[in-house]
Length: 493
Figure 1 (cartoon, rainbow, N blue to C red):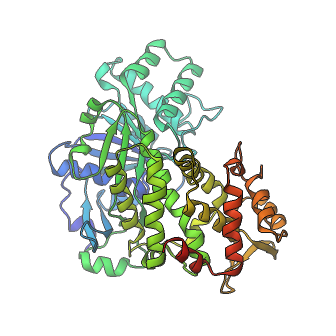
Figure 2 (cartoon, helix red, strand yellow; figure 1 turned 135 degrees about the vertical axis):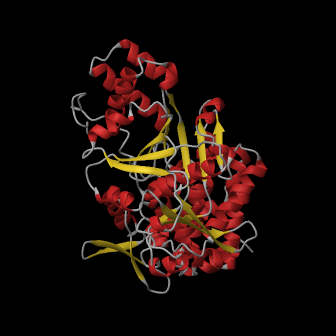
Figure 3 (cartoon, one colour; figure 1 turned 60 degrees about the vertical axis):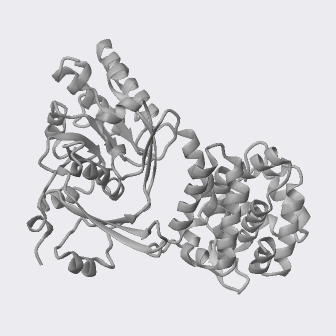
């Protein structure tokens, strides 16, 4: 079987390098690079991508890109708009080359002199956009990602004498709030520490465009268990193959005219330019993440092991549907039809037969997740309706029930209704609290202690919501004597 570089036409990687991408991992290759490939196909962009490895490790990735002439295959799988399992295969040929910044620092600096460059995309992990004391302008390169970009921009500023049209559009996708704002702030901090000219600081502030972004796509990476079968189907070998779901969303907070620098919003990709990313972030956290957190613990206690099993159970499918439509969507302020469409997409994503997402993996640190994802919906529902949302209250009780356990060989172990043991994973303080709290046998006392705990909740604690302690105790008492399935069935009958 021939390798990919001898089989595919390298259609777009020979365009001028208009994008520098800090991060060569699976997510960006299955997300941003796919979108750029679409825009190249439609003649909207006509630019290629320079991949940069921002850390010293994993140098072999660039060697793989060199061997494959930058080409790789993206396989997108999920439930299509007609409700059927679907698979879409797309060769990606918009990558020109890959360099390791530590091994080829000169090439990195040379890229700053490229007159065609327009965009910087980054994914350097949540910890990537952070200040690191001691980074210097003379480092080759500095350790932190913002310091690397401060150096890179200064090189570009000098190369083009501060030309206003040679600034860059920054599209960071690191999973922190206000990622672009934070990146800009730290770059300017380095510039001031390094005593760079005021003209450079003004150029960074006025002629470089830093967006805040929200991204959403599950990327399942290299399909190691299926690669032989997939390569036989494709007809070539591909050591950089990557798989993802069909769903994609990129929300970008910035001026609409900036979109012309990278016109991916004109393709079939789901890209939204907005002046405020916060409502979309809230929509994702409350509906997608909140839908997960408020359903999977009960589903696991009921005997399910993966998300697909949960949504294929008519009982839990009905539970999830009512949870989203009746209790979460009414707490959000985006147009109702838009929220309903997003909720439908979430349910389709949960039903993706190509992804085996274990409920126990999702259960990690569920207390902090419930605080961020579910408690705001519960409290907002009460604020708007002066009533408690029954399913969200039950999900809180299911969380407390899930955390019922005892220490065994250094692990905090729970037990399902059928007797199956499972490990409960969270911070030590949380586990210690529940180990002590569950010595209480009165569910009213237990609910009051849990919901007013300073270990679990912010100020004010969940127990301050009127009637929530009593409602939680009511569901806990039910689960002491009946299976979770029976309690859920009664809730959604």
